[in-house]
Amino acid sequence: MKLPKNALRISLLGVALLFFISNAYAQTKQLKRPKNKVGISSVDNFVTQSFDLYDKVYKYDGYAAAETPLDDEDIDVLEDALDDLQGLSESAPDIISDIDGASVFKQAKATLHINKAKKALKYSIKTAKELLLGQRERDKKEEDSGDDNSSNDEESNGVSESSNENDDTEEEVSNISDDLKVFSKFDFVPGDKVLFFDDFSQDFIGDFPSRWNTNASGEIVKINKVEGNWFELKPGYGIYFVPDVKSLPEDYTIEFDLLTQGLSKQTSSTARLHIILSDNNKFNDGSQHYVSTSLPFGQYGAFNIRAVNYFNRGGGDINSTIKADIRDEVKNQPHIAISVTKNRYRLWVNEVKYVDIPRFIQELNVLNYIKFHINNLKDGEERIFINNLKVAEGGVDLRRELLSKGKISTNGILFDSGSDNIKPQSYGIIRQISQVLMQDESIKLNIIGHTDSDGNDDVNLKLSKSRANAVKEALIKVYKISGDRLQTDGKGDTEPVDDNNTTSGKAQNRRVEFIKM
Image (cartoon, rainbow, N blue to C red; front, side):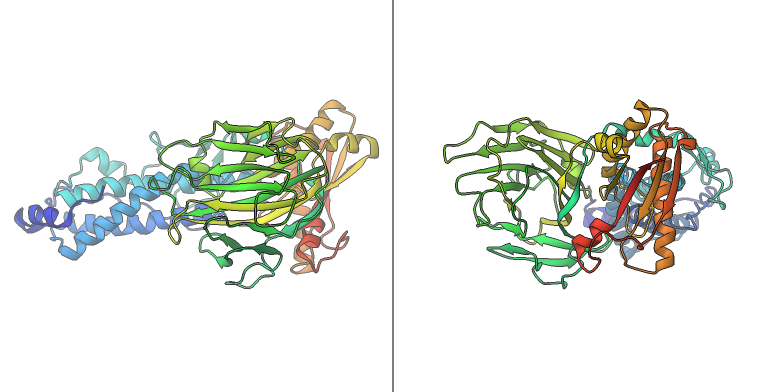
């Protein structure tokens, strides 16, 4: 809690004009900021902000050691810094989750940098409080631990810090794949024929997206700290956002990334995002048939995911509240995945499956449209954005196809933009490939990466090869497949299967092939 400024100033100014401690207490040795970035934006931002705040506090700690008094402006800066430090410290567990799916080396480096930032935060919070209260003192133990590499009070996440603070390349990695084990059971498999894909890259900032419809408003925005264009859904009563998706098949998947801003303990318990499958493309749930699941945004309690179906104007059999505490997830850019296999409906938030209803779709071939609806959010304060909406036909068992045809091609293995970092939601497909290899130990596979045509040809060729190798490494490290059964190659953008001039075509061309050797 932020200290009352007036009361604090009176008490501090009344104690020897803010002279804190004597020179007998030498200042703690300064922690060294990591020299190089990791390449994961959330981690790099977390580390940068942590050390920026650390530098401020460290400067004022130096004033205290030199018996230099703090003035009113100094106190303001420290109070604001303390607020920022506490908020940043609370976000640390979420930042750690962002490294999932990165390469082994990048995970190790990210964990090392996060641990350094957490050490800087711990020092900064403790020191800022003591400086503000006029109680800043250090003993010999603290003096010796200023640049210590021990991390007894830090979660190492399987990574030990190097004894050389200046050399980030000498990081000792231990059981880094343990962090990926949660994905080894992730069973979402995206469809393999893209029906609709929109990352809003073809839309202008400030415009409503060209491939959507609404009865209200929304706009494409850029957001600092996250990549790409994002579609902001504007709240209102009876407002719907309808992508240009038509004639959904019996088996398909829906995926999108969700981003939120401004959620707090004051966010309404009824604030929700509704994902609706409907029999029309009008601005309502549906005329005769629809199903809806809704994700809660409230933060002061754990609010359930809701599932409702409605058929033939007579209601439906399902009106459920499903136990789910996703408060942290909705604040940290989750990936939402839905699989419809005839009557069966499943929904995942990140790697966790929350909904699996065998006969949620009571009547086939009547739900042809997708709609989004948000409600009970404070306009301008609590904001909801989505990106990378992908609808694809399929999402069924790829194992049989690989066994029967000897090869499969999938665009469901996703990577960070311009990177070989596998996104966590891709592990459902990699898991199925591993099951084929475990079932028949005589099978060997050639893994071939493909890219779209964006960028330089040579860069794309190199990227496609590194992505194929990243899939190979995931099979080896997460699923314990022998490396001598796997071969890799990359074709860059030389073998497109769709039009590289459209976003959906590009999504189809970004793919990985598995071919039996």
